[in-house]
Length: 367
Image (cartoon, rainbow, N blue to C red; front, side, top):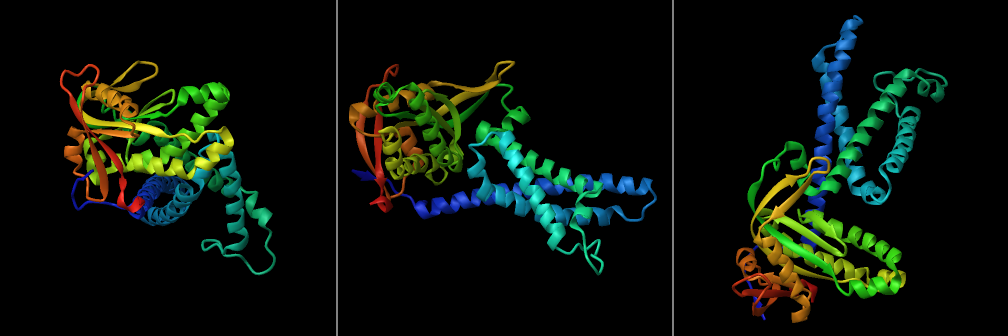
């Protein structure tokens, strides 16, 4: 057994911190987006006020909107990212938006009923909440915040759909082929054929769907991009910088392994089988670009893709659940806390020269 050294090791507690930091960044991006939308809305409001001869400066209107949008964005975006997103992600978009619209109506009604309004102080005496709710002003504000929240939920879902590289579909970065250095991890579920035959294909599909849901966060929080699902196989890719930084690609696999061990009892009771993955890692140059006219898809071509798949195929032969190429080990420079063992040189299908492989046993904090 051999350990590789560097000072850049993050224990499990730091992984939780990095996840929290990523969620904070997302909530902040939501707040900034809401501020931009609010500023645009302030411009339209000012123009309407000017047309009707009402007093007020554009600067005052924008400042008011910025403060409200920033507070609402931090509160609403933070609540959605930290609390509601994980709960609602299994719902259809229409169902999630419907629930959100009901909650929005309850919140806005509560604000009118219990929070003094600074711009329109409540006069002395009784106050009918219904008279304030059944107005065009309330309806306009309700539709504004509901549509803004619905748009935010849609963008978050699109980001989940296309991964962390989804923005590239909008910017057209890969409309023309580009060459990049990327890391690939090919995951394959152990004993999948036997499990499918035993529990039936419908239950097996449910198993895969639940399994993929469980591993998604580990991939997203490691800044990985799900390249494709092929049956019980998952292909994950990182840019070289993201994958090597803090050894995210390796930590992603360890996080998945830990989570499946914690969930083993559930899978045993539900499906009679606790799923485990085997993984193959490799990195190198690839050509990446979008293909298709109707259903565009990003694809990677290059020797590294096939090599990573063949490395994963050697896991059973060596009795391990992961294999890492020597080339990737050289750039990862794993810290002493990572315990690895050399497998030796192995011939791979389609490769003229044998490739040296390593397997990751675990980390010191797992003992």
